[in-house]
Image (cartoon, rainbow, N blue to C red):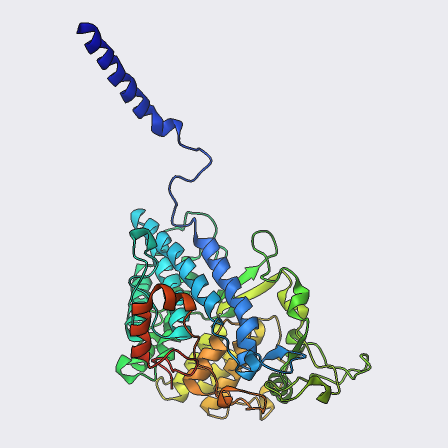
Length: 476
């Protein structure tokens, strides 16, 4: 009996010893045990910005008559022929990175780092706004909770999503503290400049308040006026150098979204509408954005000339080689636009034109145009605004035409702003389908119907359908 007891005690001591050493022995020193708030920041910025730049080319250029596939005898986004899966990558990409943004927020709260917490709130607001503006009602409160066993999230209304977005941006603005340094490595967007991050937060706040300004119950104009009139409390971008523009260096992993730059220009044409607008303005951005068209001999240049979006018939009707993209736009070093000083000035120009603020609409308009050139490294020529087509004429349409050009290559922003205002007025050509009506949203992914049918059906019933012509909550 004594021997048995001794053996049992020795066994317990061995088990205890092994258990105590187990954690130390099985910890891989080459793996991150805990993430810091900054661990995910650069991947989030890069992946979202590069995806959005790619989508500007793949979708926005076509839907907003900037460029189109050529030859293209039938179908295509430029003809408003939108497939059921057109929004799948948008849905999947944004939700994937919302998970990472949530992890970043949790880590910042755990580490009591208010600046990283504010950045996470800002990035979430940006991403959620892109989602709801693209689809309408989408999951928010119950989204990205698969680890908690929640695989069928309910869809939140667009109004509730915007209320949360605006609340988050207000909280973020109050959290930023430029007396505290960002200590978790250099961020690739603002290089740890807390003041610029705060300006991005408030500039985004202005964009989204204006986005929903047709909903009078949201009191957007009053809030926007308050922000403009209180620059100390709500600092925004005041020059191009402060803009949220990602510099894509070409140094791994900060690479161009185009693995092969030639894919950007193969079988492509600039749209006639876009080229004609820039020609009427005698705009110096033409050389930056596009090549010159040529006669069929391939050597005789005929200026900047595009093909009509949504054209009917085949390409033989066009007896010239149209202007194409400038391939240099997607060769690193290159830029990826997120939100620019130019856009802030156009927002202020619209507010002044509407009488919401008392500042000079003409001055904001001209600042916006100049900045929209500057962000591409283009200098405005003397006398540009003496051209009647470029001069501020007091109308919203004139502001929005220049804003449309200023939002070139900026994710879905041209599309969103057209849906809000109806400007610029785009040609309706004979080859267009969908009754020549501009599509205003993506259909939900088929996976939502299959894997989350009850919540999908509730959202569709609330919105009035799941097709490309169902207007979102804020739309005109």
